[in-house]
Length: 324
Image (cartoon, rainbow, N blue to C red; front, side, top):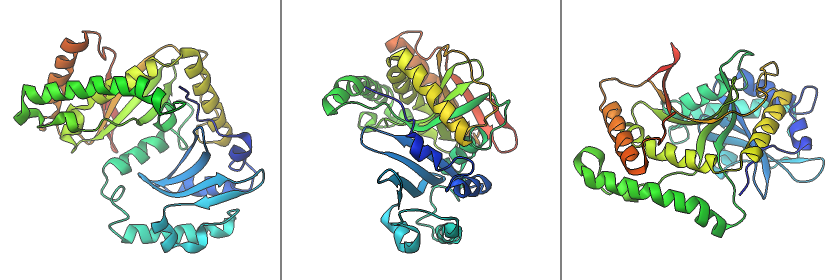
């Protein structure tokens, strides 16, 4: 069981001020629709550029000096000169611009940003509390698509799988409770293993942020189960290791500029707080009532302290974050 997405100093240094890929950092920062995701697992490390939820460019190290530029085959077909390179010079900005233009003009490539749903708002949150963040923001995003790693499948099945089955059982019970109201066969519904955002606030609390768009009614009212799973996974992780990993990722991202360098680092990690953020929520929706029902049902099953420190917010472009 492990969690630390800090990339190697050599790979990270490519984006730092004065280095060969700093132009890419500036390019992404100045393009509203683009953002970075950096990370590693037990087999590789990467720097990726995302447009909403779409990964359009990945930089992978192949030796001590060079990097390999890669992406999904469908993007290689659009802009073949951009990929398969051992390095990525500033001359490739036009190629990236061309790729973005082609994605925008093709609906099958632009499902996750232009519709201003999940991809659009996740990108907005990531930039506001990341690369475009201010020194006094309430929190900063440390990691995206955050996931605990396991040494092998047996360990994952034993640790994560056991917790996952607990929440799938709750899904089945909720479905049986009122299939017309909550949905049929909920036990077959997948519960993902990637947390949307792991953040750190000014007081030293780790925020486990799950994001939903306001139109995703079932996703909203079933989110207590998904959030509960993530909360169990991260609260069961050794606190000292988690604290060290979060601070290392924070320091690396501040050095690169992916988090504002002047944002003040807390001295210690205090607690873990689960958070639900919903964008553009329609208060005429039944999602809030059903959400409260499922939260109360789950507390009856698992104990009254289940997600007792859960924080919920609505996010709009006009007003930012407000209580939900």
